[in-house]
Amino acid sequence: DAGVTQSPTHLIKTRGQHVTLRCSPISGHKSVSWYQQVLGQGPQFIFQYYEKEERGRGNFPDRFSARQFPNYSSELNVNALLLGDSALYLCASRLAPTDDGYTFGSGTRLTVV
Amino acid sequence: AQSVAQPEDQVNVAEGNPLTVKCTYSVSGNPYLFWYVQYPNRGLQFLLKYITGDNLVKGSYGFEAEFNKSQTSFHLKKPSALVSDSALYFCAVSVNTGGFKTIFGAGTRLFVKA
Image 1 (cartoon, rainbow over the protein chains, first blue to last red):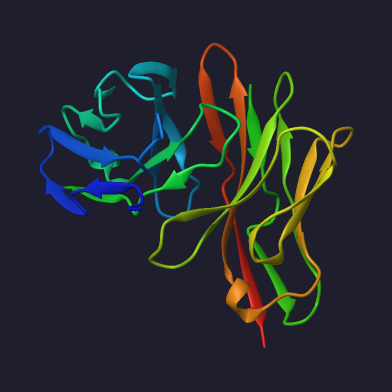
Image 2: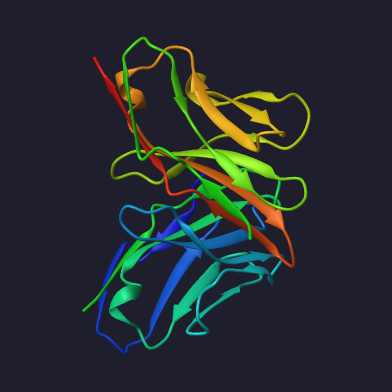
């Protein structure tokens, strides 16, 4: 079985631009979460989706948005990029929203210049 | 506010010795607790979880963790460390307060020397 796949693996954007990151969960996993990991820090929770509905939101500005599609894949969108948005963006999937361990993708490395 | 603390940035241990990586948490309600490991240039990997039941839980690669409700701790342990255990370890807690979220600690880097 394929693991959690994320695309693209690396991305360079200019301040003010928009970016879309994509994630395909493990087959059968209905819960997808997004995290931001800045070098030297733990992952910071952005969103959780379960059964195509937003089930949790972290302390990120409204420039960050996400959605989950009928096939349970997900997109993370970031508008009006700032230099501080440069980070590794991780997608994670699991069977249920709370009581299962996540399987993480390898992440998308976003650099904003 | 919900939080997870890993008080040690780095833990050094000799191969063959026992290791402990500490984690404390502050959440309302009953927590679901997790440990993850991150190897260089690889994604986060799930090690083990505590949901309910026995306070000592066993996970992957010989790791175990002890849940202590009175001390709000969930320390990761291994009886005999291997050099290959050297990695970045994250403690995490899942909460459901107005929405689901999993909060990660800042991480502890484990160095196991031969």
